[in-house]
Amino acid sequence: MTHKAGQPTAQPADKPETQPGMPMEILGMYLFIASELIIFITLLFILFWLRSGLVADWPPPDQPRLPLGITGVNTLFLLVSGYTMHRAYRAVKQNASAQLTRWLMATCVLGVVFLTVQGFEWIRLIRFGLSMTSSLYGAMFYTIIGLHAIHVLVTVLVLLYLWVRSSSGAYTSERHIGVVLGYMFWLFVVLIWPVLYVLVYLV
Image (tube, rainbow, N blue to C red):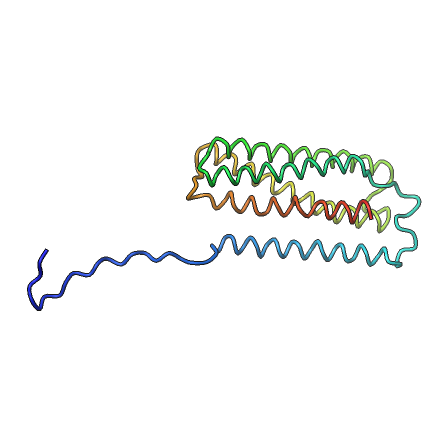
């Protein structure tokens, strides 16, 4: 199209600018994970402070010992769930909705297995005399390991919600921020557990 002399030419419409940098949801999750990590570090610091001499016998001789073997096997279930959640993340990035749904369900099942085994072990420990009120040893054990169990339970519920939404095709390779947030926090829950297992059960 030609324009007469002196007549202003039409300007192209402004294109929406893309926002560079990290999405606020991702940044918020990083900050949340950092705050949760500080809580666990603080509890572990208190645990080792008690072990260092404040309490004469650690663990107390009249308290039952922690179940190393079955908890070690249970650790493997949780580590495998980290792999299945990674596969779910990869699936949504590839726009593979059916695979996303399957891997999310597999992650949820493994998380429930982990909680169930842990629950049965706690019942046995309580029957053998280890409780929150039996000693500082018991109080620290249930505080640290119980806090992690709460994290697992809450995150499993979140993953079940993601699974329900993925079943209806809510997530695509372009729109999957919920899956990313679930993936991030589940990895935190999974990766911190071997540290807790070594420092609380083995050391």
